[in-house]
Length: 399
Image 1 (cartoon, rainbow, N blue to C red):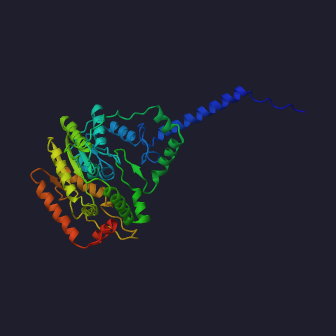
Image 2: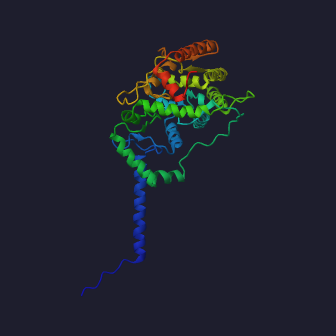
Image 3: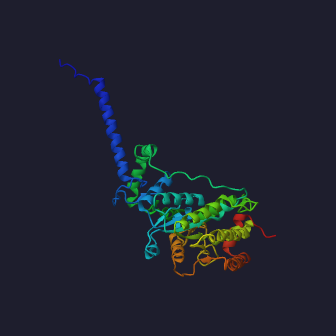
């Protein structure tokens, strides 16, 4: 009778297990580094494998900074999600002026974030020669208490925690597999190498739900938020709010370093302008523009552009409920504009006289605000599907 095979010594078994674990972890780490879903390692982009990066909701600030530091672009786009998805840094107007641009905009961020990014760029020797800064009225709305800019924080870095989360975790592996999967996917959520989010995934959203649903959901959300904000854009004592201080500091930092800036008031859809009127904050919106122009006028080489006026572009008709065929040219919903409108905006600020938007200066400001208010009042006085929709959202009833 054959004797049983000798069992593997316990120590050898442990060594085998440890070796297997190390090999697996190393392989996963190397794989995740190669695919580099966040683009933080600067791994080579290989067509069909990892050239297209997914739009991820974690380590967003780090990913944006690492890409910005590597490109060290001569022009920068700063702002919130409106700028991130509407302003394409590869617009040919930049190259025509000998510039290469990067989109630094981060969703939900305020002017203080833009200032922080500019400080990081300056410290890295990558301060832009030209900046396009999107400013947000809602960030200023409700500023009733004196504010003070806090100390800036250090630029995000790839530390041990980040390495573990991005290369050795299940989340990191999932992100890598997602990166591979979207290389040939239709309308995937992506982020370009220069920080632009084309929001292609919303094409499918419109096909499934229609533009009307997007407009309506955002309008109801905005109404709830704005309706509870105090009717003020700066403290009662007249001191600057923290947002105003951040805009002022951004322009000061940039211009003192020899840079120039275009401050952009976003092209809100006319629905938002009508909602402001029904909320009783249309005059406050005009006062905010006065504040922005006054702030910018303290700095040489700074222009202010207003794209929020009532125009053919901002009056793009909202499709009817149930319409899932229409893909709007200029808007995803009232607060977020598409690349097509962003291209017109960029062409205008970079020198093309295309009739879209108005440069605001101290000598033309009041005349423009008067014209703009007349156009808004005309919309309010004329029955239309848009006004009916706004009044439905607002629960407005004529007495």
